[in-house]
Amino acid sequence: MASNPTNRPKRRVIVEIGLLVGTTGLCLVLVMVLIPGLKKLLLQKVGFGEGMVHVNGTSSIGLIDEDFICATLDWWPPQKCDYGTCSWGSSSILNLDLNVPVLLNAIRAFSPLKLRLGGTLQNRVIYQRQGGQEPCSQFTKTNDGLMGYTQGCLPLSRWDELNTFFQNSRAKVIFGLNALYQREVKTNGAVIGPWNSSDAEALMKYTVDKGFTIHGWELGNELSGRGIGASIGADQYASDMVSLQNLVQKIYKAFEVKPLVLGPGGFFDANWFNEFVNKSKDSLQVITQHIYNLGPGVDNHLVEKILNPSYLDGGSQPFRDVQNILKKSKASTVAWVGEAGGAYNSGHNHVTNSFVFSFWYLDQLGMAASYDTKTYCRQTLIGGNYGLLNTDTYVPNPDYYSALLWHRLMGRRVLSTSFQGTRMIRSYAHCSKRSNGMTILLINLDGITKTEVGVTIENETIAVASKRQIKQTHSSKLRNKEFTREEYHLTAKDGNLNSHTVLLNGKELTVNSTGIIPSLDPVEANLRDPITVAPYSIVFVHIPGIHIQACT
Image (cartoon, rainbow, N blue to C red; front, side, top):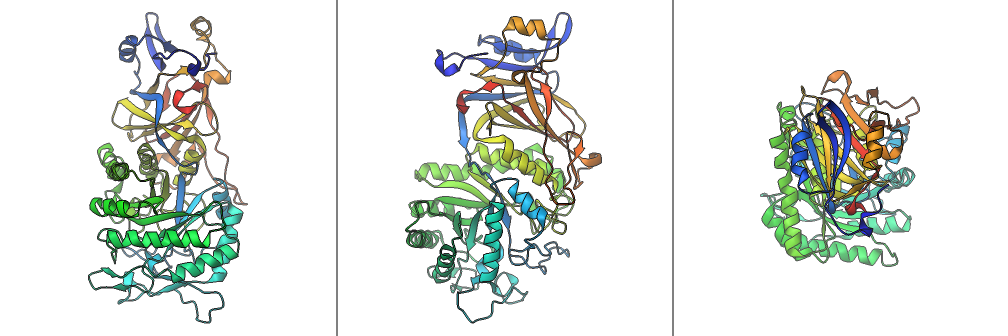
């Protein structure tokens, strides 16, 4: 077994996993190359599959939260409809059935799952006061109300129920506060005056008194830049964030660990975000942006966009822009994606809730992490046509399992990764989450080509026998864990990209009659063999027997 590279003089080490051509025909080998000049020669011989994943293990390029995966719960009532379809049912924060076993089990499987409570109507929600006599009215559609709905109310009894559920499910809650409470909104959408924090303060005090734990308080929803329905100037919003930070410090004064302060929960606008960060950086711990880069849910070309690598590449710009602003400001603020459903206006049935959407979703997770985005909140956990869970039955859609595999396999440290070969393979790599080594994510957007993939890891060592031992054993099945890797192959049932059922290593993933989430078991593969990525498939590859400098 190779010793720890940190205890030896530094040298360039390349690990190649893949196929080589020998004088006697094809043989499967794993080679350690210690001479830099041999890399180019070896790469010319490797990869008669379709390509090669290159991982630089010298240092990480990003550090995500341990609980990077996040999902949202929204306020939309059953009457919320888009393009003639009403897809929300009883999935609202106010009416979701919290007694369904599969819902509890689905959240518990993450231990923890971050849950962000918010959405368009959060700026129309008031919070029932303890001892208050006024009735707690619900949202109803109207032609003259902001956002198209009347004001709604969160009953304290429901807040109690929700927090009991969150405690039982071990969820970490981020609550989106109403940023427009008792503020004047002009006909052009401009918001007048500072934030009135009195309603939020009452809810916070009640929450603390009841012993409920909130991971973070976020101010407002989609009011940055031009805003959705209303907008707040960056200077005023920064001032409002100071007010929220002061409120949190006051109410949680006795707490050693205080909730995060987040904002603005809106779409990226370069000038607005730049001013907002620079004027609120001492009070803002997390800057949150929303992403719906596929366009409207009614678009009939969503699948074409999802399977287009050039289109997916364009999704990196918001992550890059936010990081540039944070670096220039030298603020301690970190970036999250606070809400991302891909296609706005509730998504598209049989697309954003089907297998094909995992191509977009996992690519977004990989891309966001590579730009040091700490958390990524998926719209939604349940509700609309883009839920991780089915709105009516609560059973997981394919993206739920994609998210769960990411959560369990992809560690905090992000590794620089590139792919040489076809453009239809998307590749990402992280240090493994609960073991040594690394995990690679491969996404095949090609529906025809089966791709054999080799791996190179620069500047690292692998727990492998000597070359003499490899020569002696290359034709035999190595069963030692140091010579194997674990693979998780995701494919659509019957090859149908619009299927709501996903197969893991050929086995259908289903919950049982008691709502238990199925185990996600890998298949073992010989470390020397190339990774075979089937057409229209996703593969997580966990390689434990490797020691990477960036991961130590």
